[in-house]
Amino acid sequence: MDIRSFFQRKNSDESREIEEERTHQTVSWLKPSKRKRSESEVDSQDDNSHSQHNVAAGQSETQAYECSSSDSAEVSTTTVDYANDTSADKNNDFEQQWPECWSQAQIHYFSTTYRWLISKNKKLGCSTCSHINARKDMQQGQRVSPEWSRCLVSSFGKDKAAQNNPLRKKIKEHKDSKFHKKAVEIKERAADNTMKKHIEDMQKADYNSTCNVFRTAYKTGKHVRPFTDMPVDVQLQVLNGVNMGRVLHSNNTCAHILDHIAAAMKEKIVNEIVMNRRKLCVLIDESTTISGKFVLVVCLRSAIA
Image (cartoon, rainbow, N blue to C red; front, side, top):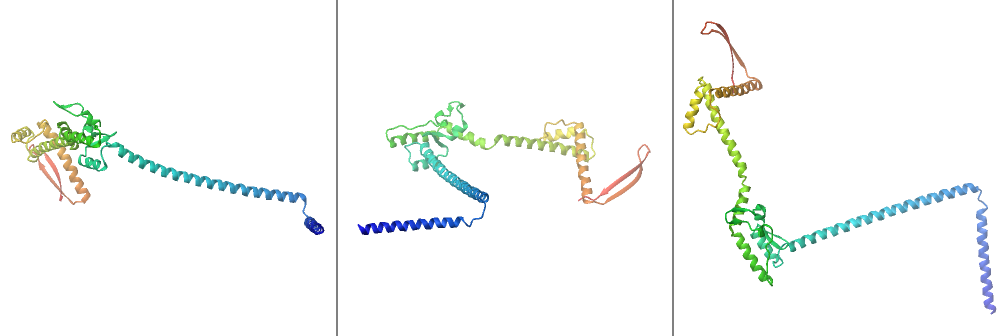
């Protein structure tokens, strides 16, 4: 009992000494301070404001970083999910588009062998017949099947083998049918641009006939023949099988054509002389007419390549 009381007393004395030292240190720290209370309060407020500002800035940066990281993570996850969904949708569409009784090898074979074969909602159809959309009668006794043009051809049977046989038979019969061949022929004619070629042929024929008429009129003016020779020359060429067009072949028409040819030739010759700076030769001569009047004739000559 005496030893226990001795140690308890010793511990209490040591704790008392430690408390006295702490109080002495605090008093010694407060005594040398000569700053005013107002200044210390202002400094403490400034320090607190700076510390609060720094803490707020750090929190805002942390929140912004977390938001950006979360947004990027969401975008990446949504992108991956969208890619997976699209791939899954494509696979599902590919699987659901063709009949269930067909395997991948059969789908590849029929789609490559019969290019016109299409499918929708697990039912077969013909792209050529649907493109022509000839549900009306093309000829007597020929009509495009609405089942093939609307993708309504389906299979029936208990198992896959029983379902494959009717589909093969229907595809073969449709391929050899008259209305399918007629639809293919119509599509090929549409691809040939028959109307465009016909218009080009008409324009070419009109151009050739116009050239024939202009050559005839030019021959009349070059040989200094009267314009009344134009109708006779045109009739002669028609008898020879030349296409002279549907223009009025009169003497007035010949005069208008020669005026047009003369204007075009004059413009071409003048441009050639001016652009290439050709040399000119001037010839001046006096002459008299049949009536005895004096006339001054001025001629210009130039070498044109």
